[in-house]
Length: 77
Image 1 (cartoon, rainbow, N blue to C red):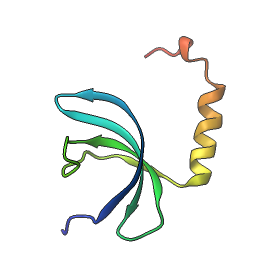
Image 2: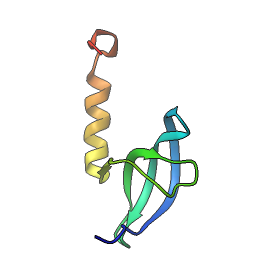
Image 3: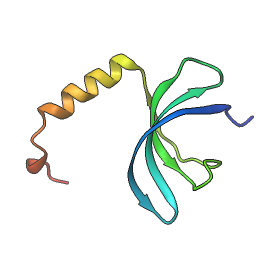
């Protein structure tokens, strides 16, 4: 299976770092398709990646609304 083609358009931030890998939120174009918000871990050179999640604009809006409604202090995590 060929490696996916990707272009990181913009880094929005880093959520955490462990053993040289950073869990990042980026805007990425995968395989020359329209960019999406992407959350996954990357190595320092952005050559290797973990599994992640991509979200279109509507999904980002819904996620923002959902997270805003949570009482994070009451989560059992």
